[in-house]
Image (cartoon, rainbow, N blue to C red; front, top):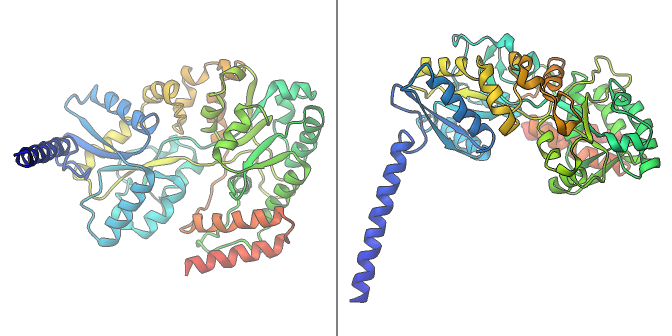
Length: 435
């Protein structure tokens, strides 16, 4: 008898489970997160509830003011899952599982569009004015002169400093503005001598800082045809020489992982950092340091043609897929929100820290507001200004393979290996991965 009761309970539970799944499917358009079939609805894949999902929710509200029947079906999808599902759909030739819109990491954009050109809708006839975004940002999502992405979050590089530590060493943040890496090392040694604190930290075994340095000079690991361009690349050699000098001088310390990297700032064991502007959110988690931080531009390389004090690290853009059944609706939604609404960016900035690449947003009063944590500096307005100066970056199809090879080279160089030999090995490793 007990077994019969248990069997009935399990059967009821399965039915309830199926009903629940069916209900979720209704909420998600076709039940799989694919493109919506309703004429007033769009399905979107993105991954961070506090950041890009929140931004999409607010964009829905903005668009609903003039289109009250409009609805967004936002499906939380981690970036790795986005990439896996996109690759699976594109390689199988069956794109029905793709949503109307998805968010894509900028560094993966070229590889995906070139590898799977049939999966994406051209934005050529969308009516979006791409001149309202920095050229370097839009370049990530332009293939053969055609725009495939609407720029979203800002990855402009900032150099952030603890002003109280700099003061202890006799410096101000102005002393670190518009400087070279040689000047940075020289002043960093003084800071270390007087305070015992390095100027910055990096994760061992990764090449984020190296890639930022390289882009700051408008250089890349690849040529215009997407072929590895490392051997004979003077900018790359100078970057590796500079990184080793930073490490050898004690101005830079390497840590083991991301948590230690953030901890080095929040615990006050370093006097600053150089990274994409999204790092400001992590810095502000140290509430006891409020008022003791300031932001300026990054140092530039010495002796490299085209060197600047500006670069980029990270960021993403919105994509309309070719599976979208309401292409005009998708175009108009993007044009009216992320590519046309200062109000949207003003709304999402305070809560999410999502800093716009939409240039008109940088001119709003919200962006110009002084930030108490940064000693009253209008950091969001300043970062938006920096973004206009960032050189373009030729990521190529094999960006991540090239970056991994350079990461290995960086570690070997730090440990004393010959720079030219390591660059040669990195190029050969990348060429092997490409073949």
